[in-house]
Image (cartoon, rainbow, N blue to C red; front, side, top):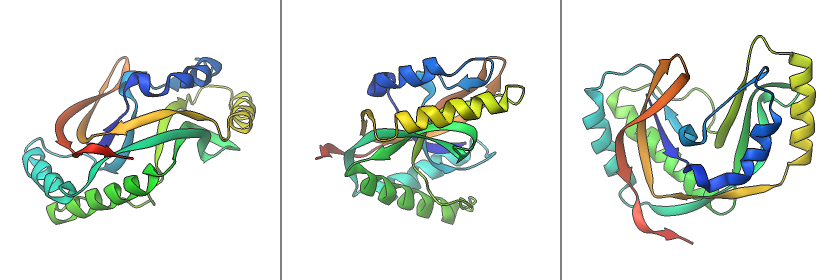
Amino acid sequence: MFIGLPCPPGAALGLAVIVAALPARDWRCVAPVQRHLTLCFLGEQPEALVAGLTLALRAATAALGAFRLDLAGLGAFPAVARPETVWTGCAGPGVAALRQLAARVEAATAPLGLPAEARAFRPHLTLARRRREGDRRAATALIQGLCATWAGHRWGTVEVTEIVVFRSDLGPPGVRYTPVSRVPLASPPVQ
């Protein structure tokens, strides 16, 4: 399970140019309906945890309003020189609200005995993951070129109106993320 923000498929239509540039032999692309920004990874957890987690998240985020978040740029983890995951980042005034939201979500999970995230929060929207059997050199050269070309490009805006507890299900077509709980943020969106 994980806690994240859904990204509506139409929020960043321009990202299709990046996805189209990634050869299927080297990259597994995330379907637009499955794209999300992860706030907190929870690992394997029982479904019984969801009710208590939802209450804790509602309490932790009650004073936070909805906000807008710009999707911008292009990058790779662990590095552009060694790309395993291709992503777009977050920009604009909404990043401060996103960081505050992530901190509150993490604080809400601690009393439930859930593991704290070991890595620093790096807001991003995953677009694709490199296939192990793909051509590493070709993939690296392609990603370096794409990242240089699209470094500061703004892809679109996401209206952040809720946080979602997702369950990850592995299957033949790949990973499917299923919402198991939703926590709305106060409205209207903060400008």
